[in-house]
Length: 495
Image (cartoon, rainbow, N blue to C red; front, side):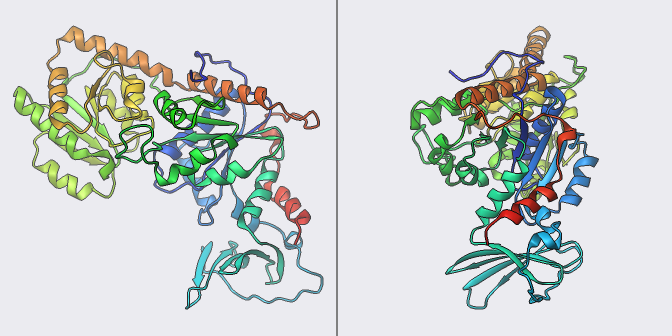
């Protein structure tokens, strides 16, 4: 059985420091990053522990992203954003540690606002990433040759300093010092970092890999089907993590069916912000909605055709509002113009609040992890109608009670289910809306944070902290200067 717990709002976290690890925060971030940011906020607000978000992308402009996240309300006091290259850029020259008597050998200058420049030799034998400080001086060079790799730091006047033969060595040293307050609990969100954190075995650091998406290819028909290329490391390194956390029981069960029983797997869904006031009343019970990225995986044309066929079958004015943006927007807009009642709204900030006016929600994806849009819709009394894809919908929806499950890819069945719902009598529709609102409470912040508390407690029980490692206090006031930590790292690192 999955290691989850009942709801409680006062679940204590083990004493220690907490972090989330992801490769970057893209400017147009979507589901995985939104879930990471929301979880980090809820850890602060519900459990009282600060969270450091650790990033590794050299192109992330931390200052600009911090401003963006603050404007969007994503960063609350206690949640901080950090980046390995940003901290390296901030090192004072004496900590870059040039050799005594070293002379300036590099005069390369970055353009205004340039953080990274990639250079390649004409014959393709060498690739260099040049990392610049905000004043334009060269901070580091990551050089990759056929003979090996070398990361070298430079002072502001161009003198060569510390160097390493592996970028992972830089990451390890930085991570060790960012997580200097032990024990440290790290939730690894990005699949790009699966191998790195699997290899980061430290007595005082606990790692939990959160699997946000499906591990099988879209065409897989059974649990032993082909793995997605990016999820192969998950299976290879499942025993190298203190915890592997899935969003659904179905996915956890399929992975264990493949690799055998493990005592380090858990099920914890993502939480969502639930509205404080909800109602089952709807001015228009024929109004549907869809919140989705406009790409092939979401199969938005299925939803449009399903509504079109339902309207034709019933003679009713069934409508669909589509919120979202993506590469297929132009093509989908052309299709929508041919179908009465379908409106493409593009990206709308706070689109989830529009679900309070919709009667039903459509999800026609090929694959999902755990679609939080279900909880957002159900909390507002909007009944979900979804393709019964391998992971996600069946873990939330009880068919015919608080939503509907449709054979995946079957547009006619989708249309028939829309018809079934919009022709329900008032009492039946009211009952479904109330059931949906009750289900959504399982995805509230207190309910989900309490499950994370159980995961961390179980991890600590199975791998007790060494007696010599003191417990850290979980207070925002205890946050140390990352520059000072990294400076210490580089001062002690071998050349």
